[in-house]
Length: 250
Image (cartoon, rainbow, N blue to C red; front, side, top):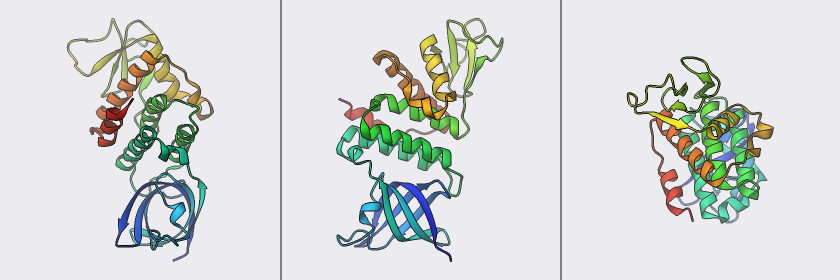
């Protein structure tokens, strides 16, 4: 088969035999793929530096049935600082686990790849605090894979904003205090106007402004818990990497 060139982020790596590794790559061009990188565990390997975890690399691959074989590789961005900080590294592992659980092989991934690359960029350079990057990535990721909340107003009376407003974690809908059945439904949470504004911003803003959002520490913590709960409700799964990340926060 004809060699194919793709660009992607290494989401997972595992050793196969003494010198080979299998890598899971999120690519712009052909989505999520598994690639066998023969000899990449050897010190003398020319591809070793390009296929490490969270590297953004240009890969030349040879398609073969359900797997690809690496022909050559060239690093584009190392995101080196992510690997030097255990909190950042663990958070990146959580993002990786989210993607691998949610994205099917061959599914178009240009937007998801862009989201991950932008998040890793800020995680690497520290311009956005990693505790803020968590809710940004969680919520925007869910929006991009089809779980965009219904944020235009109360699901019953259509009022845009009221205090309080309630958010249903399972259907993603808002209800105002007058219309909400608090006590009858257990999966709704109360949103302050600041938190509702933050959820709307992250869900709907253009990517160039996505990481400009600023919140106080208490508001950021509240938002982070909400987006975490929304992930669990929408995907029906708890993630071990998230639990480990939370356990090591200083």
